[in-house]
Image (cartoon, rainbow, N blue to C red; front, top):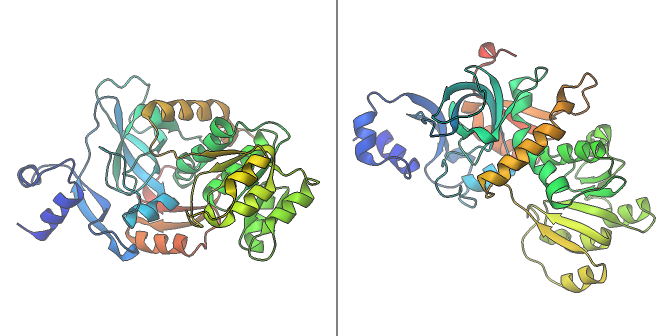
Length: 367
């Protein structure tokens, strides 16, 4: 048996056995996808031909035009963030493309070639992906596929953190860490949309300027100054009502210092470490602070469906209004075959906004 069949069997271990793959490889519809046979660095990302997924009941098969990177992708590549049970082993949490095939019992009015974007549990680094119809959204007419691919995971995460978890209120101050990241640039714009006041941290003046252009009221370069002191000065000593924190351990004392009494500190990542030493609970208790933790990928389909519907109703129209209130921020675009370089770009923290992967050549895109 050729090596490619053996490695293909390993990668798709939950969906295909060796016998099935041998017997069907001659007639199964194939696609290009990025595979990881052995966890490790970007060099372990391999583009190869594998069977195209078939939509299950209630699912829609999407021809992917563009996908986007997320920090979770880097962790999964290293073997540190496996997909939920039963989901695709292929990396990729958000895509935009066109409807290819409808599975049985699809209820929505999805038509072939309709322009859609989708939140995924995995499978985005491929030419096709099958998605529960509840996680589909229509792409606004004024957005390209690349712009649309930058929305689902990043913007739904920011929306979830602000609305479902922190329950942000008009006039509240929201401290957004990594303000120039995909989630950060979305959170700034959403906070403004909801009448809150975003302030941010970032690691360069260039990133801070981008955040301020998007609506941040203030920004702090964490490499050069204390953001806790900056928040204290900005709020007249009251502190931030909400903190969106993807950094974690290394910042805990500054976060507690920045938090307002009765404030909500929302942790959704641990880029700065998971360990905490010191009197965290005592200091948090003295402020009656709320420590909230949230992930999106591991949530139930019903939760995600409710999130997508709320976002589509409340936020999505603001991407297509004549005034274009909201906009996804694109840092750079890479071809699917250059996925390793895209990962290196994100790992170096060079990006401001989203890194997009073009799956369908630009000449084939309708927008």
